[in-house]
Length: 95
Image (cartoon, rainbow, N blue to C red; front, side, top):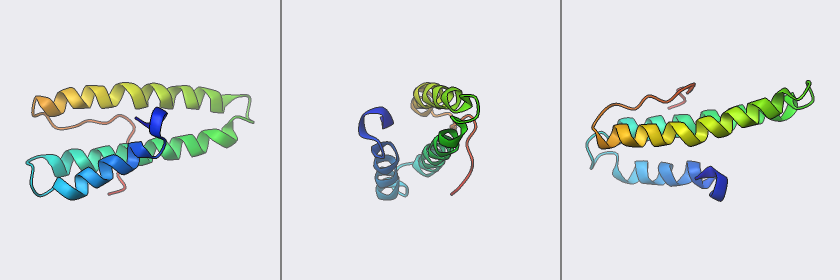
């Protein structure tokens, strides 16, 4: 979703999580995980920008963030449907 809307990938889950974390069972855990994942991806992108000057390592960072940002949410959506707990790769726990 970030590829199309930019910060919408962070704002939309944040709004949905605030609105329904107490109403839907498991929403609090999945919502926190999604917000932490999106914030982690944003941090990795910010770190990759100056790393472009270091032999192009930032480009590798951008590519890995793009792949992780595309694949991991799909895997965790399937887990959420099956009632399994989320597991986001390389996520820093902010909240």
